[in-house]
Image (tube, rainbow, N blue to C red):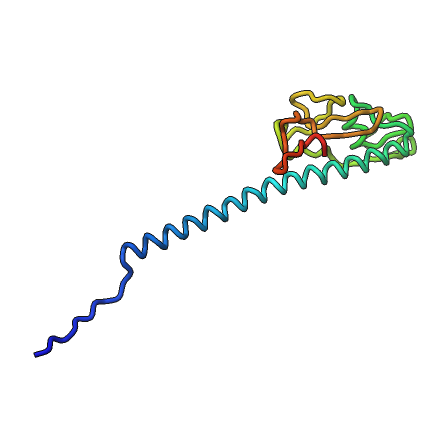
Length: 158
């Protein structure tokens, strides 16, 4: 006499479920790492874009004033209206026909002084976002040489 086969309901075993969970964990780790690299790349790109904008604005200021903004008055000279001597006003007039060259100073997007928008002289000074040399018109990220991007290039050399 033959016994009818008892058919078990189909279900996943514990081992199969564990393998799926492990594979999902590995995929999640890879994806999270990709997003972290994208964030760092976006900050580096933002720094380059900010520097490009600032450098263009400084050159325009220099062309109209025959000199570059001063370090002490950099933010006001770049964000307000100015006369030929560099004196500033919040409103435009016949006396203050130039500018503004930027709407606001950008925050430094990377490094030790991340988030700072203040300007200091041409050498590194902690607590400032940007270094500016008023004799050459050169602006850079105010960061120590140890602050580098993913390729090992110092941010203050951009």
